[in-house]
Image (cartoon, rainbow, N blue to C red; front, top):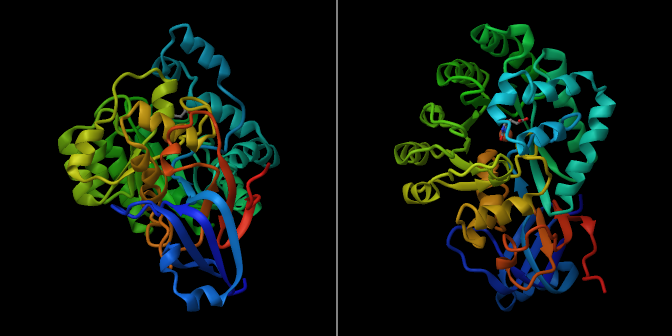
Length: 412
Ligand code: DI6
Ligand code: FE
């Protein structure tokens, strides 16, 4: 990678730095894969401007940090469209799961798929996210639920990271549902995950973090404690699906382990929010799942804000509760359904999401020294993100200082 300086100007800048105002006539200088300088064009030092070997005049655009989708299950086979029909006719998500459908339905399809087929099925979903300005994505396992199939999913996630211009972070979600081989033996399953699968998958370089579905149709906080203890012994950060369908005390446990994030949180209390804030755990909101499940209880956004919890928004791309691959749609739903304003939602899909993946030091904001991952938008102001609902105004995507998607100039 060359260390050349490039100037990007003729654009507004939304830096996602907490409390920073948007810059209407901005300039951004990159050097190689990093950001060198960010600010108002009028304040750009002449010496730095002269040092730039290339100047990209974007002519009427806005630049934001590359979007970060910090919660996806985008590697899976099959669909659950039939189940969706049943739910439209009144069947419940929990009822279908209890009858051996739900996550186990996707487990059967995912186990049966070859690695190549799983990769092929996942590509269009990741391509859709990348076209929306996403430069970092988290991908969970959790539809294999046996050692070989969990490893297969994680290898596919790594392969996607090689193939696409996106940074992939993997989360091991073996504790997503109880597989049929362990019926009636959930504690044995947790022991197997903790003592056998997780160390081997970690040794193979396939795991960046450990997640658990802690809910009525998942696992208990006591089981999460055992899994998290094993993760900590391996030096892995943890995260949790918590309080989606009921409050089991998962977020308090996640806070005790200083989890990177706690995700869903529809049933979280003010006391839980205070614990998350004290632990520095990010609250990841998943409005597409909330919408597609027809939920009515919203996560307590005011209580999370008041407590000072960092918020993130993610797509939750999965075949059951959030069948889609659009972070922009999640942003729009986070504003209308959960009451975030557009700037807050945009920070949540950049700075908050970076923190939810443990990447806050290098990504998520436009600041000198950070990786030069950013998106260029055909919009008149940053308030158009979280406003357009089912429309993608992304013009181009820059990853580590290089153009990886779209055209720099607005098309005619
Ligand atoms: N994330 C999950 O892991 C579960 N719900 C959610 O929002 C289950 C996903 C599924 O039904 O496949
Ligand atoms: Fe999820």
